[in-house]
Image (tube, rainbow, N blue to C red):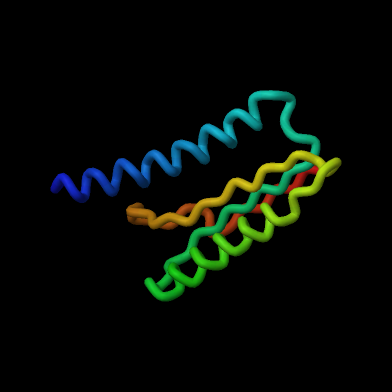
Length: 98
């Protein structure tokens, strides 16, 4: 692996590790009172990847704008990443806790 490739891979690993640690911390307590967990896997073209990344960034910006005094503290943990697996995991998973 070239140094530039290694550096990029380590940044990607760091980003996903931060999200994983955030989820693990939320799960360690008795768990959240309300939660929705979504996971989907698909083969997307580069242009679609960029479009989904932009929509995800817009969703987080909208979420941050909804911050209100007296509101319930919530966390939105999101990721979009490429896979190198030879076979696709489950195409979709949805879990809601209310």
